[in-house]
Image 1 (cartoon, helix red, strand yellow):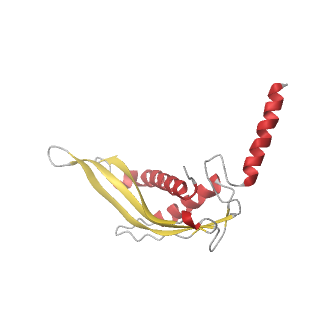
Image 2: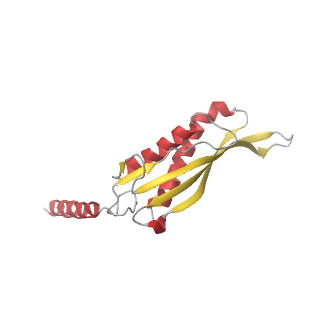
Image 3: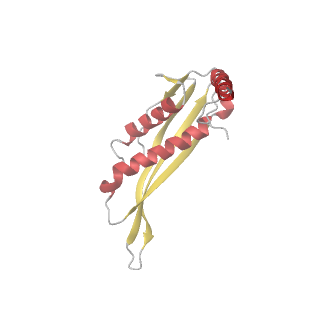
Length: 168
């Protein structure tokens, strides 16, 4: 009998917490009146352009918020709004061997993000986010590029999500 009571009490508490709209199990703290989100296309303004990166990053950021919140994606400007651009996409050697050859290379992607919160403008920000992927120099960038981009986008969108709506 105690298990049933505990289940009902926890269900009621969970419903109350979720209904107020300020907490989710992902740790997101979203204003209760916020219902919509918008993510403008992030153009690739980096000196080295990877053709699919803009689309992949923009969709990755949209997907992150659709999966982790109850916000509805809208065209134009939502209650929470993201815009910006990809400012850097580069690969460079990071570990040099004794014979001056690279042992490891690093792919780095940097995005400039402007975030606007209609209901809590004190949480607005404009900043750069950067992540990298290290790979063996015996491999070419084209051999690791798709997996590297996927991982970097996942890390970048997590960082941006945390900055925008996780206030820990």
